[in-house]
Length: 281
Image 1 (tube, rainbow, N blue to C red):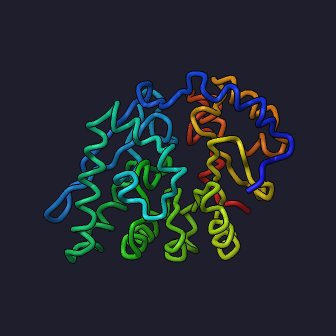
Image 2 (tube, rainbow, N blue to C red):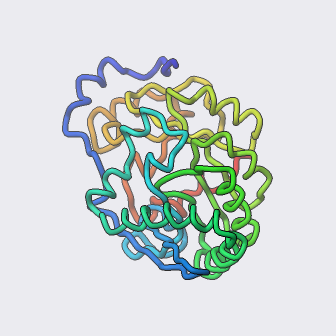
């Protein structure tokens, strides 16, 4: 993996240890809603960053389905496990993390118990009625099986009026999500799985590459429409992040997630920024 020639990594590295901002969870508003169904219930959650048009930064409305970090992420890498922002949610909003644990267990029971179609209809109906501004799959967790991928596809199809988006490292299940017009599939990648992400992207060109960088290195061949997510220590509030950003080409600067780099604001969050919500042309 090579970095952009303009990235001044040597100058940046001296500042990498200067008080990195490890999590934004303490300043994030979280929300939830309980969904009842046959012999079980699931939680829809959300927060001010990802609520899209469903509420505001300080008063978000639930619009996401989440599982457990790492354990429900079969395609995770060492890079993403170390950078995972859900560690902050676990620490600062443990009641939200408990929802993820419940969902992880219950969705497996639903998929194995014969009520998956009924649950897909219930879930889709709630989304269509309450999440018209957009629905995100997995603030935490990922696609853990083909049956689950197919269930997600079914929910999206049954709530066709709503724009859905997902970030995934479970590249082997992307085929099950292919061709759903109201679902945008973002391929989460880093230096460890970038090659596999590019293979998947070549097979399914309507996907988007979303690259996580911890040390400032970025691949030189990101396509138009890609997104770069900087780790906490490379964000705009840090000197190291400012040095890194200034070293990027104008094109790559436009790829950097404005919410992650510049910080959350009412007009700077998922929804007002829709680059991950719309499939690449």
